[in-house]
Image (cartoon, helix red, strand yellow):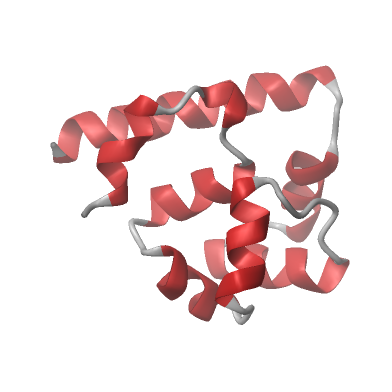
Amino acid sequence: MNDNNKISKEMPETMTIFKMLRLMSGLSGKRFATVCGISYPYWNELESGAKENPSRKVINQIADACGLKAETLWYLAGSDHPKTAEIHKMLMNSIEEYVRTVS
């Protein structure tokens, strides 16, 4: 089953930045965790929101795998600044647009 089909069924407010990044990559959770150099169970906890506040090392690994600056991901993953919600919405719109083009 392709995870991209699940995107439109989830509310943007409940999707973690980690899940957004993985869905945008088009990779399975296991493959994405491998690319990031972290265990799948740990990745699954981050993606689901069960695990919060990953270490700087983990943030760096995920950012490197996604081609992001670690500071950007650190900000998005842990900030309650109003801009975070705006960026979250912008990313969700990008994901939804991507899904429309590949569906």
